[in-house]
Structures are given as C-alpha cells and as structure tokens.
Image 1: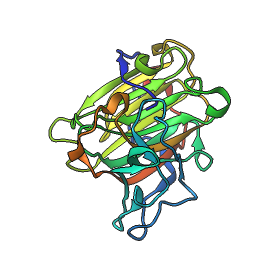
Image 2: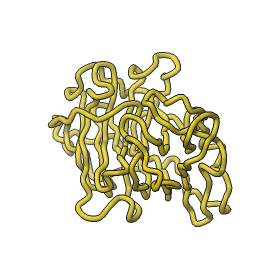
Image 3: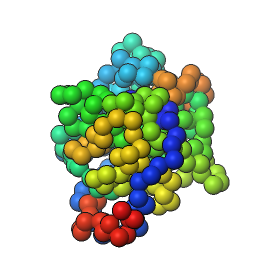
Length: 270
C-alpha cells in the first residue's frame, strides 16, 4: 500500500496446502458491538494525519467515529468523507494492530465489502514491525488486498522489500469472475510460510511468491502487523469524483490463524 502497482511475475514457490489443512484460529475481531461505537482499542490503534502517507493521498486519517465505527450488525465501517479537515479536503481512517497483534507467519484474512468510485483506494495489508528501526521498504510489506475504486472487479496482491518496492513490487491481480467487489462480501487472505506467501480471494489461490521470485533479500521472517484503510486519491486511487462520497469499506471480520503442525514438504512439492 505504501506505493503503486506490482511487477507481475510467474512465481516458482510451491503450491500451499489446502486452506483448511491444519490452521488454528489464534486471534480475531468479529466487530460485535453497538452501532456507532469505536472499534476495540485493545486490538486496533489509529494512524492519524494527512501528510500524503508517501503516496500523495488526499485524506486526513482521523480517530473519529465519523470515519471508523461499528454498525451494530457485526461490521466495522471505514468511511471516507468529502469535508474540509485540518487542511485536507477529505477524511477517512487507517487502523492497525501495531503494538497489539504482531506475528510471524500464518493465515491472515478479512471478509470485506469494497467501495466503488473514482478516487478510492481501499486496502488490507501488513508492515514489518521493525519499520521504526529500519524504515520502508527494508521492513517489508505484504499487501493482502488493494483495489482501485474505479475498477470494481479487480484486486491486487503484492510484496515490497529492498530492491522490489513501489512500482517494482512483486505481485499479481485477481479478477472477479462476475459482478463487482462492491456488490457484497468477499474473503481476502494470505498464507504466509517461511519461504513463500500465497494469496487467496474467496479461498481461490491466485498467486504465490517465494524467496526466488524477489529481486532482493527476503524480508518476511519477522513479525508484521495488520492495517485496514480507505485512502482517497494518491498514486493508485487517482483524482476523486465528488459523486463518490461518502464511501464505505465494510469489514465483517479479521481473523488470524497459525498452523497446528508444520507444513509437510511432501504436500507442497518442496
């Protein structure tokens, strides 16, 4: 999410085991609570500010319930608004688990309904927990899902690291067979193993990236934290259409799993 589109590769990593093969739930947020309530502060913290976030984004991300709140039906709603706020023309929210949930390897998934509209950039992604010490891209970045609001049936999955960041990121796109991601909920996930990462939409595997597929060091063997955000404008979102707002990214749940048993190399082809 910190920067743009991926370089699309044919990847050489082994095919991961089945989605239900040995995964055990270790953390989740089902977003149960009263309508209008803030998300659980023991699980989520806010990135607040409006300095462009390294991508020329136009929104000011706040910690207000106007931009991130529960809907009373088991969902978190991240809402982008067109309003003058702290010198920015838009507001939204950016929630992360930095300091509350940081893990190495596992299955990370969210069930989301994405917003549609020119100028939107919704994302579910991860950053290395050592970002404050080593900076980006040395910390590593795993984009579980990014989308362009004007392109309603396509999502991106990407990794960034030293030598393969920004426009040189390694990734692939997934096109929905029919309909739009704004029509209803879809599950976006990665399965992150010691030597490769696999991407899924609705449990359909659409890419995997391994150690040999990146043009630089593999920086995915240390803890990462999760991020949910709805950006406005920027290098991927484009120029906003006023008719787009207000716009909502709806989150049914976020779940994190670990393997009960190590992956059997015989099952992955290694």
